[in-house]
Length: 157
Image 1 (cartoon, rainbow, N blue to C red):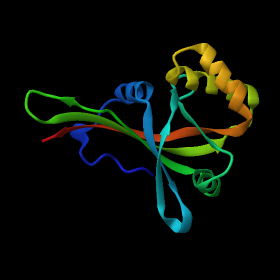
Image 2 (image 1 turned 45 degrees about the horizontal axis):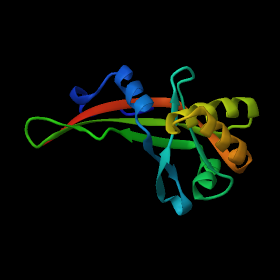
Image 3 (image 1 turned 180 degrees about the horizontal axis):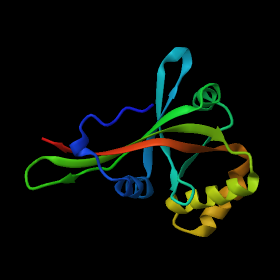
């Protein structure tokens, strides 16, 4: 169903993909947007290795949510800043995930995942708890079930 990576020599391991998903803070979510146009939008996210799922939040209405409700198939791309070697070139690892997105409905599970999400971005648990208290009812929390994942190392030279 999913194509194999064309440049297989550049493919990185699943463990490296998981490390990138765990460490990085920004990604691009791509959905099938209005009138069939692709819509890619930067998002903050949480990868939970225990569930092998990706989580992020969005508003209760908008282009991103409408697109996911119309077609749950998504592409999720994460990449590192890259490491500059001795010469001018960069070595960059990236991960592409294909999966299915759904709005979470289990409030207890949502609170658990939102707290983990917050701890990735906020300096203290108190600040996370305050944000959850203020904004929990104003957001949707989305879960992506991973169907296919590949990672790649590119030497940009």
